[in-house]
Length: 455
Image 1 (tube, rainbow, N blue to C red):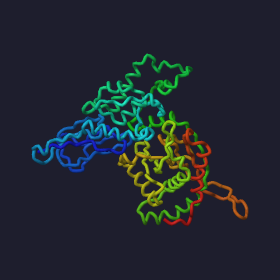
Image 2: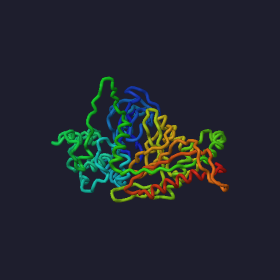
Image 3: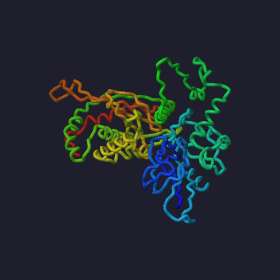
């Protein structure tokens, strides 16, 4: 029998590590080709790792809860073949030179683009850290993933500090958890404890970001529920967003009667032809995509004092999971898709999100986010920006209301389908005039829907 190294595969752009959450096979179990062997979790999604070969699981190199880097050997399998030099175990880890080249390539990504991939618990410093807080590039061959580098940059760790932290991964590599543990120890050993901060006292800017809330006193009968992994990531991401961006919210009312009547007329024929429903979501996303082409300065991100105007229009779509958590899969190049293409993309992402089958790349690269709170009966809301984006739009429920209708014969009262749209945006780069005009343009596209449109 020959031995085969099963390595952690590349999980998507900017994803350099994953947490082993559950082994699906145990040593001695037979594994078929392309059969899932282990479940892993990145900062965005959970997914399975299939075995590219058939064989027997001989050894697990990582246990549940441990963090593995992309390229690490996570298991050893016994496969059919001769046990000679041509079938010896191949080392999965790259040489130090190749690892360094991989890091240098990833550094070409702007810090703003990295923020989305680093929703790390415990990181409280704002993304607008100055260059003087960044660690000096190391001359050693020790590998630091972009994720670890980003944490060190945001927390102002020096290269000497980074080099001194013991690594728990293979070959002494430093993981995200290693750095977070070090930061926690450094924080608790500080002579000034955050618990002693007076409510009336005004903390400094650096202290303000790190002050933790006091523990809530529980009463008899209260139930304490530990957040699951995804809820912790969502919580950290939301806190970081409001710390980063000054949020402003605008609202508009839209008469979507023409759009509603058109969908009611088309939905049965569409389902018969395409085999799936056409919902309102792709209609909304099409209007958002058109408005972003009209106002490209809304499709931006912030990198310190620089504004990054995004070339692609990639719309994130907030979707509910069976656990009650939310995830934001992304429709890439939404402005280039037809309405049928948008509808199929929306249905596909929503279906795979509910089945927990999203891939890491499905949640990467968003430039603007859309959320439909009307699905829960809400008329409007003030959503939190999905960093590093600069804006997020929410649509409320569509309700029938009496409204004034202007006609050539005079004004009249009629029953119309009315909805509210709201948009939260980063006031550092989007002023009220731009944000309000953009939101009005989205509503205009919905109100001016062509009732004779054919798809």
